[in-house]
Length: 134
Image 1 (cartoon, rainbow, N blue to C red):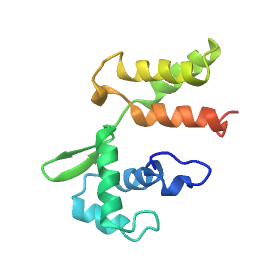
Image 2: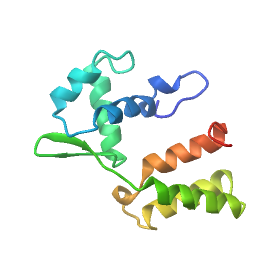
Image 3: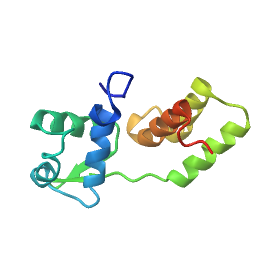
Image 4: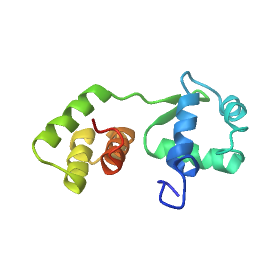
């Protein structure tokens, strides 16, 4: 499962496994050195899960590979958070908020690799769960 639900805990979803890998890629690493770091975790204990999670992160545009090294793709969270607050103040919520954030994060570009999917997904999930609301 990509996202957690009532029967799958966040840490066992691809999103949860992705967080573990992203936290381990603070500096560029080879695939084998990254595997050595995460293979003992309960969530990513097989090479198949590891590769599937790398694929997921790559498709979302959160990691990249250059010269045999895996590295994170950084995005500007500050601008995104400000846009989120602006839309909330304008009365956007639920799906309309999600689609506005999606369009904003992509710069209204049809190119998926331009988007900030991690920010969009996490902001939307936090709104649904009301975990990060003050």
